[in-house]
Image 1 (cartoon, rainbow, N blue to C red):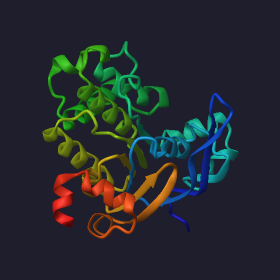
Image 2 (cartoon, rainbow, N blue to C red):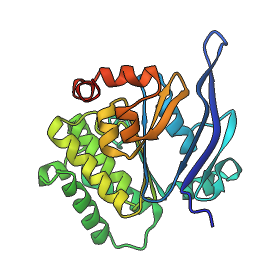
Image 3 (cartoon, rainbow, N blue to C red):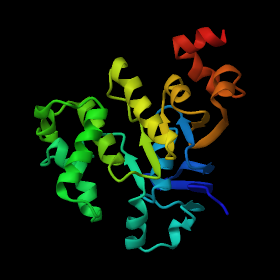
Length: 262
């Protein structure tokens, strides 16, 4: 029996410019992920990382290819069926400012997915789980838990968004630059928290522009440029012996990595 959490084959996502030109944001990309496995997708701005993640979540429709999520072709699902399937996915958007309902407190924002999903949990139990998730991400101050999203810092909102994505104990995490607004001390802590969930069986796709973070978060890395796959392999192989000149350029932009490969 095929136990893949997600499998995408030859995905192509195109957009039309204002001048009518067709641009392939993602071109012929294939992905396969098992439970408890992490894939890091790395590339610079405009490489197609975010579009790929949105296509995998069913948020944009590919012009070509297929996405099989938990054994189901998402293109064949109704909106209700897709919404129900997405409850098994935790999605962390790149921009935390627009990802959290501004009128909710941090605690309410994390609790909301469980209430919407109608889980068989009492409100006290939901609140307890939400509090534990926020505390695991370093948000322990009662004042922060009761603060509305609009008064939180970008880094705090990002951690609230991660806790919100974890609320339903997802089987796959789709994370778009989930540590971009964290300082050096909390960045590693966030990755460690995500790694604990992966260790318990959750699959994760970790999108980043930073190869150093990719190597810490995942054992397998895919490098993208202008919508195309440059190369894919183990983190050790990609970081220490890349095949593509673009990957070498990315490595050279990170001083600590450049020293290792010099």
